[in-house]
Length: 239
View: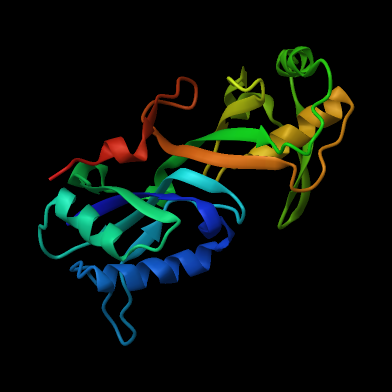
């Protein structure tokens, strides 16, 4: 049976890298006595696939892990078992069966991601931020130079920003909500959008001035021209 686990990562665990999170879950699954399936061959390993690695220093409510299990313990029981062995900073939110017709692994499905970006208290927010933000988004194109493993390439961010809002919170601070293209094709990080905005508005963002929180990951059940984003969690079902 194919299972999709949704978990959140917060607190001190945001400084733990992706490879260590993989090892952490391997140990947690064994301790929780989850009947996970193993690959065949001379060196069997847990059948496990993460949706999209989270950068070090980021927190999240929408991390996903796909596994295969051999027995049908209930979703509620599995969540309880896993959270019983979790360290502070990681919490399992759901444990859902993936129907056969939706059995593509989470990594291949990711098409978009939601983020909330806030500024640290030590950062002096420039005057006219709201006006500059609206002007920035109203451009016909937002051209940037993106560094890749193969070098640099020019990229238009405009069509890859599906949603962007500057929200004023009750304490008068700002929160920027972004829904961005994600996945293997055009993976846009929120830092890239904020760097482009700062360059447009004529200010600089110091290192570590941003607090970035990933809210969720989405599959596109529509088309490239008319996307329909569905949470990876909603592709599974409780059992």
